[in-house]
Amino acid sequence: MRWFRRHRGSRAEDLAADKIRDLRDIQGWKGTWNSSDYMRGLYNGLELALSVLEGERAPQFKDAPAAQGEEKG
Image 1: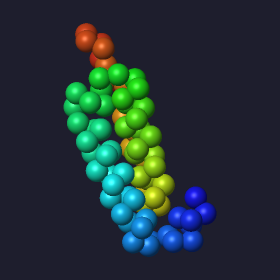
Image 2 (image 1 turned 60 degrees about the vertical axis):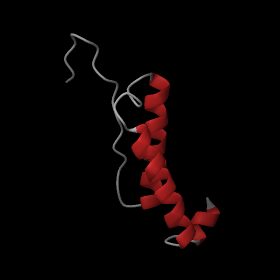
Image 3 (image 1 turned 90 degrees about the horizontal axis):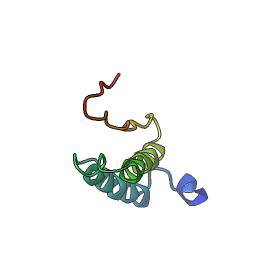
Image 4 (image 1 turned 90 degrees about the vertical axis):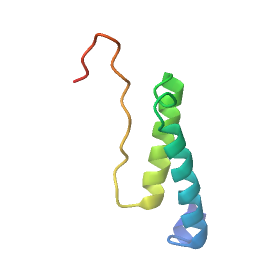
């Protein structure tokens, strides 16, 4: 983590953020993130890592999908 603090805003950090963003976006596809608790956790972990690298935003975690016949509220 110290390396990123020293190089905040550097090309290396931008590349890392871009790669994590791509992975998060793929993991966010319907049928991927909502296929299991593990896959949702993977998405949320990538989202957390990306929000840390981006700095000024809170992570937008995905909640568990509502079970069939159950309302999400």
